[in-house]
Amino acid sequence: MTYAIGIMSGTSLDGVDAALVNITGVNEETEVELIAFETLEIPEKIDQQIRESFSIESSNSALISSLNVKLGELFADAAIKVSKAAKINLKDVDFIASHGQTIYHIPEETEKYSSSTLQIGEAAVIAEKTGCTVVSNFRPRDMTVGGQGAPIVPYSEYILYRHHERTRLLQNIGGIGNVTVIPPNASLNDLVAFDTGPGNMIINELSQHFYNEPYDKNGEHAKQGQVNEKVLEDWMNHPFILREPPKTTGREEFGLQFVQEYLNKYKLPAEDWLATATMFTARSIAKSVDKYTTEKTDLIIGGGGSYNPTLVQMIKEVLPEISVIRQEDLGLSSDAKEAVAMVILGNQTLHRQPSNVPSATGASKPVILGSVTFGEQN
Ligand SMILES: Nc1ncnc2c1ncn2[C@@H]1O[C@H](COP(=O)(O)OP(=O)(O)OP(=O)(O)O)[C@@H](O)[C@H]1O
Ligand SMILES: CC(=O)N[C@H]1[C@@H]2OC[C@@H](O2)[C@@H](O)[C@@H]1O[C@H](C)C(=O)O
Image 1 (tube, rainbow, N blue to C red):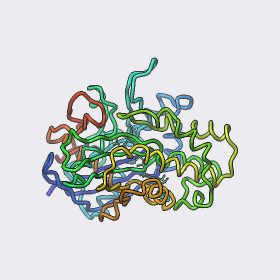
Image 2 (cartoon, helix red, strand yellow; image 1 turned 90 degrees about the vertical axis):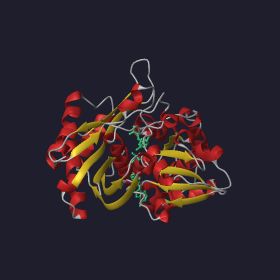
Image 3 (cartoon, rainbow, N blue to C red; image 1 turned 90 degrees about the horizontal axis):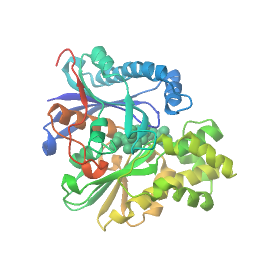
Image 4 (tube, rainbow, N blue to C red; image 1 turned 45 degrees about the vertical axis):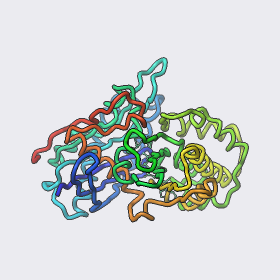
């Protein structure tokens, strides 16, 4: 029995997710069992500082340096919280796998910037505060061999969801949407995975703007509105949506600036904005997965967006021919999925095994992801 904790702080800033699992085996023999899952709220001040650090205009190196430590403390607290919930002593936890908070992601080189990605939340702080060995910093190694450093969940999705006769489309709807396509009987090289566009990011910004609410709870506002086809068409022609994979995105393309630009360009009732943004997520998913669907296809939705019934209904409408289900329909948790994925990646690292999927990230070869910071007891 190996206990491990996965920690995920995603792009939507809705909290730090911590999953305590029992993990055995390695590579294709890996098996995981979820024991406990907890979410730790991000304190208002830290939330504010993370948002400041996202934008080139408001960010600075002192802020990033300080946040790195504060987030390390917060991630350690999340690990402590889940170990208490599971009634498992941290001394018995073999390792913590921490994704970190992405504050900037440049998937491809530009004139000014190298392709690079930055996840912060100091592993030394987590290791010291918990006593556990910490695996972190999963993305950069893939970038050194030409990959985009994302998406990194496809490896764990292959381990957990591959099926001998069905095509499985693992659609995560967090801040950003990302899909992993697993054809029937696939080997790792057959996987395709990429970001589909915004998940909840635009919906959240609009909810904040119009209703002073961090998200459209249960899609209630979107449900009252009409989809505006003109805005939708404009969005569906965004260069990211038209681009072929491999491709990844983030707040840099679909964050606050994007939303402000369109609020200036078009005038619509608040609920129509919400309906249109929700349909944009659904349509961009449909456009992305369409060519991979067969008669025997399951689109398995995970991430916070799966708790938005208006969004799930729209996805079913635009993809009438396939089965659209949620993680919960398989007895799993939409919330815990990415934190569990981090444990699978961390387990690969500690066994010195690769876990990037070159067909997903565009890397030239499989590489061992992550950095290891040793704890006291292991
Ligand atoms: N009941 C609900 N109704 C509507 N939306 C919801 C509900 N619960 C969660 N969400 C949405 O899910 C979001 C959180 O999703 P999730 O935790 O998967 O994102 P993340 O992991 O931070 O992002 P990413 O996967 O892009 O890194 C919330 O910000 C909200 O928009
Ligand atoms: C750079 C970064 O943090 N990307 C996230 C983000 O959130 C969703 C999507 O964009 C995905 O590409 C990725 O996260 C998951 C865990 C991944 O890499 O698979």
